[in-house]
Image (cartoon, rainbow, N blue to C red; front, side, top):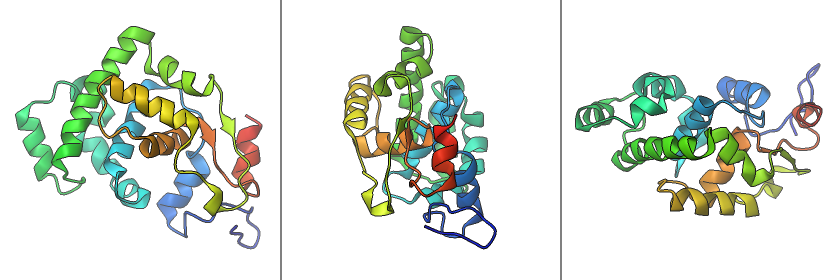
Length: 195
């Protein structure tokens, strides 16, 4: 646990990086119900595969600009010209497989919206429509996967999603507030429990 004089105790993983601190304090673990925000985290977690969240977070604004403000309807229509432009964009992570996966995932996302009315209605079923509040005391206790992320991964892959393994799904669940993995001594843990 990290604590500065006059500041509340917090999780240690932001490690003094301002963007990571802001993400921890304002977004991580906060339940989201907006489909575009869901797709943003799906996209970012896809690109995070094999990399650190810090790397992706520091390129987030570039991703937002490059991928039309995370507009999944537009992304689903990307053709070879746009794909080529993305591969030349030094502001993002230029990984051909991940770019192609994001375009495919946008199409699958739209199919889920048609079936369930919204992606939000679909995705929250994996935690019974509510946040799972965990009670970890140290970072080493945080899991990489869960029973819920296993089920989510299996279903997303069945629906055609790429880069949707259980570890990626669990990271997504943390970002989307489906699980509260702030350590119990972190001030955000209790704040999120009270919401």
